[in-house]
Length: 146
Image (cartoon, rainbow, N blue to C red; front, side):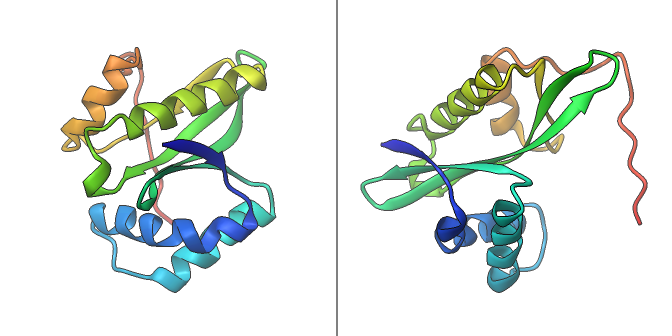
């Protein structure tokens, strides 16, 4: 298995995985929209995406968005999307993608790697906790739906 940093030309390769990821989170299938969304993020350099490839092709991806902490006056990264295709689950793909995300944080001098996941996504929670992510219990996360 290898991990590659995605470029604009990889949007079509990642799109089926991104579409499946969105379906997992109860969104309607939209393969064309997924490809365009990814292409826009990569073209505008608004995210960094790493692709895991195994002998069958694209096995997973992680998408990270740059941000900053004003209080800490440093860069942070948001691990916004992590998905592994079903045939590759339990084979270390998610771990390798997290390792690559952590490496990006180190390379860019980031203070933290933040994420959120559904309270029902127990598999992802186990993976994050094994990797020393700490569930925040001292503050609230709010969202204003527009």
